[in-house]
Each structure stands twice: as C-alpha cells, then as structure tokens.
Length: 320
Image 1 (tube, rainbow, N blue to C red):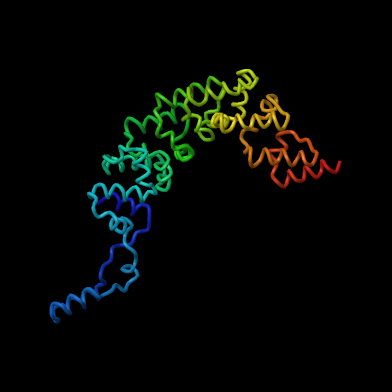
Image 2 (cartoon, rainbow, N blue to C red):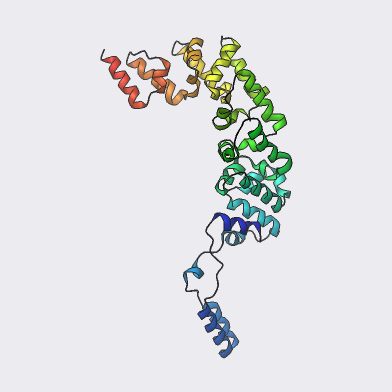
C-alpha cells in the first residue's frame, strides 16, 4: 500500500473509489451484450452510481495525485503523505533540502517511531512544520537519544513525552550531546532546579544556545547597572527573559522606562516581568493613561491588571 494511502486511512475519513453498484453493473453488462459497440460504450459511460458509498468523494491521495501527473510515483507518494499530515512540502523542502532524496519508507519510520512515543497523528503537522529536519532524522542516532534524555536527565515519564514535544518540537531537532545536555548543565549551574518546570513549562530554554542566546542576555542585563547575580535572580524568577531579543525588546523597553517613566534598574530587578509586556500595546498606553490621570502606579499594578481593572484603579485613585 502506498504510504499516502496508509496515512489517509489512519488520519481522515476516506471514501472508497467509485464503483458501480451491482445492479448498474448488471444492466451495463446486458446492454453491452445486446447493443452495438458504440451504444454499449455510451451506456457504460453514462451509468452513474446511486448508492451513498459510490457517490462519496475519492480518497485524498487519489484526488491530489491528479495534480502531480509528471512526478515519479515515489516522489508523489512522499508529497501526498506529507500533505495529509498537514506539512507544506515546498516549505519543508526549502528548510531541509535532504528531504528531496529521502525515501517515503524512511519518513514512515520516523512517523511510526514518534507515534510509538505517544504523539498523535494530528501533532505531526506542527512538529514537522516547525522542524522539517526531523523528517530525515535517524531514529536510532537522533530521535531515541532525545527521548532517553527526557527520561534520564529530566525525569519525564513516557506518558508525558507528547506534552513536551508538542510544547517545543525543536527538542527533536537538537543533539543531546551538543545542545540539550550542555543547556541543561548551564541552567542548573544558574540555579534552575525544577526539572518538571524545564520540561513542561520552559523547554525552549533547553534548545537555546548557551553561547549565542542565554549568556549574552545575562551580560546585557548586568550591563544595565546590576550585578550578574542580580541578573541571574531575574532570570530564575522570569525564565522567559532568555527568549527576548536585546535590540527589539530589552533596549527599547528599558530606554522607555528610564526616559519616559523615570524608572531604572531597581524597577526591573523588582519586577523582571516588565520585559514580557508589549511596549506599544501595554506599557506605553498604560503609562500615558496613568500620567494623564495624574496617578502614580507601581509597575506590577499598572501592567498586570486587565483593562477593566486598570480603569477601575485609575478611577479609585482619582477620586481620592
């Protein structure tokens, strides 16, 4: 069975190909015997299925194949299989050129292995869409070590593999030796001790480069006028700080805090979550509204409140 047909049968309700009902077939046979060849051909061509089954649409793979007439069958099967999983083959190929020469059977082996580790068919579009390199990964050399790392280093039970992978598909595309374990060691040295939180809430940290991402963020924060220990304490309280871009996030928000709000380093040390809010949609509008109302609010109160709560705070402060 072609793999695209297998995926169609396991993921989508698939109708059988058109077939003539037994009664119609019998009529056609009789007409063919009693009529001239031209009449018989016309009769066969004009007989229409009448049952619900025979009027259902063709299999997705069969329908899609109509658009790929010039491709070799193996290539067509591969493309259709990925499309049935919700993967854009063109985009996946641009990000992972090795996909062009990958055999459909090797892709099927990856899919089968991931499903054996608890992933659902509906998850594969997200996983392969975000990380097309997983499609050409080696089950033995690349994927098995990742799941062993989740269990041995982070204590993730097999039943929870799916939760981690769906949260951060990039874990499957990372080398345990070169990325996942070095990142874990670095984070533990900083003071991250909750393996459950790292696995289920912040797995993005495990796929972040120590040299290019995490260490430079701490250096920037320390450069604002605090000690490295203070910067680490901020990251422990708000791990998302490791995911923000210095030029697009840290710098403009801190400059606004200092230049427009009259704040400084002590404010972000006390409330590191300040950097998680949008400057254009939350920080600046809330600050201007409070300033226009003549109200001075602590950063947490000003930013964490809902719009309704924020309006009520301004009214209460104005009425005093």
